[in-house]
Length: 173
Image 1 (spheres, rainbow, N blue to C red):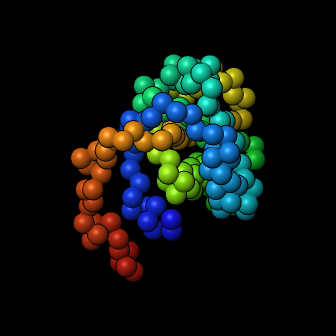
Image 2 (tube, rainbow, N blue to C red):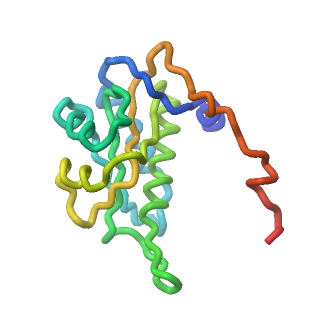
């Protein structure tokens, strides 16, 4: 599947089959994370693979948005490992890097026939507590993942797009 097909066909899956995602398939998705561009290639992403019952139970205490997915990737960044725009405002690249990594994994999963939903609706304090995250790790996103149920459908809002002229500007500002 080419990347444009993956982007066009993917949707946020909220209904999954109960079968496990083989570690080999998770590993292929994680390869996309390793290939993702990050600021100065510092690769500050830290990804926790959650695919066993005790970890998924912990995750359920942090979010109501697992939707029965048999696996999830908790994407964090290491505050001490990311690049910072020191010369100007000191802004760290970690959230942007984590977002790029998550996007690449989401598209790789789609290409492999796996469904995902990018979840940001979680309690970061609960994530820190449940998974004993060190202070330097900042949780950014959950990528829940599994095989879509046969009747999984995109949300009615999935196909809605703002008009291009509201979003894209050529040499205007």
